[in-house]
Amino acid sequence: MRLALGVEYDGTDFCGWERQKQGRTVQGCIETALSKVADHPVRVITAGRTDAGVHALGQVIHFDSDADRTTRSWVFGANSFLERDVSVTWARSVSDEFHARFAARWRHYRYVILDRAVRPGLMGSKVSWCCLPLDEHRMAEAAMHLVGEHDFSSYRAMACQAKNPVRTIHRLDVGRRGELVTVDIVANAFLHHMVRNIAGVLMAIGVGKYPPAWAGQVLDARDRTVGGVTAPAQGLYLVGVGYPDQFDIPVPDSDPLFG
Image 1 (cartoon, rainbow, N blue to C red):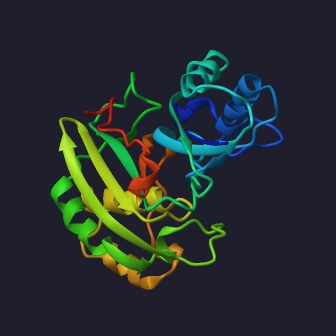
Image 2 (cartoon, rainbow, N blue to C red):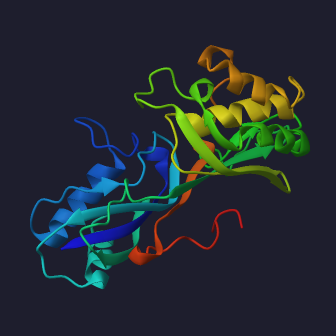
């Protein structure tokens, strides 16, 4: 039996998603909890591996089990073994054709920036902080240069192991909600640090360091060294993952933290 689960977590105290020999990881905690519910070892596949400090509202995983449990039992049973910073939000029985990573059609990330002179005391691990005023209109104009199918070599980490740097951004929106500037990116897939590198370029443009056209110039260079600083991890959220309708995979209606 194949099951798909939704997971949300605060990435602050995790060494990222992927299981490691040392360090606390989301995958390690989830697999330990599900193994206790199943009464056998469980290994999960995820829609997207997140880095240390990155949060998720709509992470999707799948695993196989012959344990006879209801979907409610998988959710509440797993959560009874999980700490407060990670939670299973739903469970679905799916066909063997479903694959959390390879069946995904799009992924939605949001980058949240606190735009004020004074550093945050309450949301320090939940937002990125920019002490200079950001012009979200300049950032939105710059973002348009990145929409569509492109070679994003300039926007991926130097250590990125993806064989193909071409990705398709379906939507890249920049907005403001009071002191919070949000960058929403929906794409078919992402390269390592791609969202954080895009956010770094947009922030440099937002404070007036470069013109909006610079985002396109960085893209055309296909060279990571010409890009901006990688934005911090704590402002990044995996909001949701989209799949073909046949799998009936839920997508969060909205961001419960920021509206």
